[in-house]
Length: 352
Image (cartoon, rainbow, N blue to C red; front, side):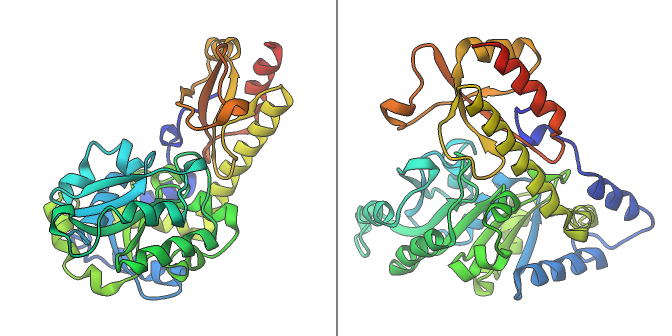
């Protein structure tokens, strides 16, 4: 019953098979090998246009280096107050952008609205040197609350970013899970909705260590190779990142793994509600945040379940945990099977 994180899962069989398949022989280093070049072309096909792709080791590096490409002196980067770049990246975005300021924007269900973004930006008027410069907007897809921005919501946020002539960045650590939920194309969820640069995450969805910065704005990508090298994320054996992506994309394996993880999360949510629990936020990807009795939480831990307590913010009187309740985070992955879900729900049903 391991629902602690999709980071705890191993690599998907298709990815491991590809790593083994591409291990033999010799290949040029630093991204000049034929496999890296072919995977770059594959990204073009996936996104239905020419893109600039740069492999990096972690999501934190992808986010921070992507934002660094658009940095300005005194730059302000607007993000949700619970976003990964704001809460969980040890100030790496500020470091990589040479002191960029992350400006929190509040919003329900892990998302912020165009009006909230516009209001936050007004504190940084153009041409006023004392307040710094608006530099970029960053959204998470899926969000830290397990929710997903619709295409219309992304486009509306882009309109606000465009009004201040700044780019829209997407933290796609769980990009495939969000894509599976919306049932649209990668192009629809990114550049066709106004995204300029994407942190394309694959590690959480079955890769061993494979992330990428994807620029839809090719002009902005010029010189990015120096940011990546200086940040310590230029792989000498780049073909092994490319190999992971080769297995990941093969026969749409990445969408299959994401759909499975999402399905397991929905199954968990339905069972939790049937047992009298509730979820803090809508379950729209592979994460869910149930509110259970503390006695249920403790029984689940004694039974071997791996999960985390989670802060429940701005839920209102009807949803907020009561004194004898706790909000938890559960994450499903490609490796989650129905037996784990059933075991979890069986323990839950025995403790009322």
